[in-house]
Image 1 (spheres, rainbow, N blue to C red):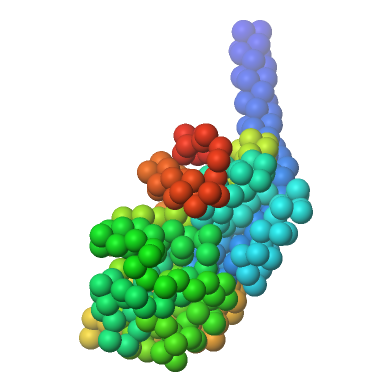
Image 2: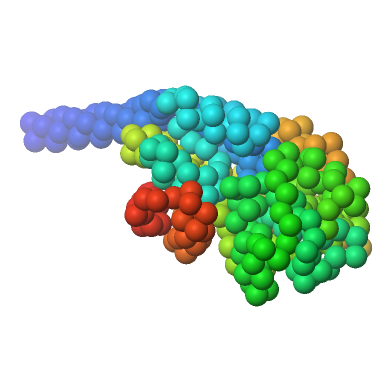
Length: 324
């Protein structure tokens, strides 16, 4: 009888310890979620911002236990000024050229992930090729990804910047309006406004996909990236859940085989702050998962930045790609 009593006590103790261990583990997991540090990200009303706002609206951030503040700016200049002046702002949606200029200015930013960044050389009426732009006025924004994209497009066609007349128009809506009103031969325009131009009858001459480049990325201050390693992993999980949501939604088709008119597009216009004209877009592109950018994309932009005198530091993609 004594043996059975002793065995029963041992089993009870083991079960109690096991239960305590499970409770401790659960408490630890809940604690790790509850103690995630907040994340503050600067961005503009661009295509790469869409998964962030969908993750927020659909509760993907909340499901990961994240506290994410998305701060939208009207222009790249406003965004950069705020990021430079606000040390508590962790992340920023930028391109590799902006990254080069941050580094040159002494602000240590690393690349966390590539982002979707479709942008195009949009030809005006009757302009269908890069050759059609020789001696013509092309609208860009100097020292931005659009400037870099034009450089790559010209080089791919055996041309240089001297073969066209470049005019800097920082405001994207103004750039589009001038092109639509036949005030330029071409303009460098990212999505979603590129689709608005195409729907209006203008021509896609070339773009990031055809040229094999993607300079767009999610950057973080290096110290924030190192301190918020777990938060960043959770952030990327939430963003990829948003990407899956977007792609599943966009894959729905009507009986004719065309994409259904996107109710989601109107939601995105409201959430992200796209111009009203973007509501006319009938479909969204397929969004890639958030993953670290290819070193080539960064190194090629850094080379362009040196060519333009924007970067003097001896750095490469290996120095700025953050290892998860």
